[in-house]
Image (cartoon, rainbow, N blue to C red; front, side, top):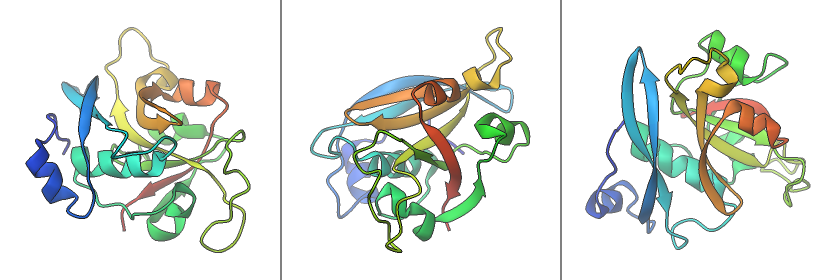
Length: 185
């Protein structure tokens, strides 16, 4: 189930009792959920809520608000140890997972960003981080005369300073490499 309206501040305070979460605006998104068009709002948070580059926190907040999921509070590269790895993304890419229906809305994608300033960061196990970026899978957009899954799969992310909703094609075109699908334990 996906939430179609954003919570008011009092609800946010209850959802995140130990964190100050403020929604400053939103990005309208049209999804195709089981053949039905559904409009949602991908939240954009104030700089006091999420600092630039904190993609893991962004994905966690949006997963909680829109899907009711409780992902671990951690850096993106440690998520693979504190949440559940659903599967690795191999040659088939994100589109292959979607074709096999192995990708479901509300899951976080662990993504390698080769130009990241964190690319040499050590993870929880003191090994070099496998990936440094997280994005949240929202679902598919309605098929608007385009059958290419790369243009239909939508992800919400905070990429450095920009909060955005992107397609799988845009992720790959940016030079990002999706590596794992994660879900709550």
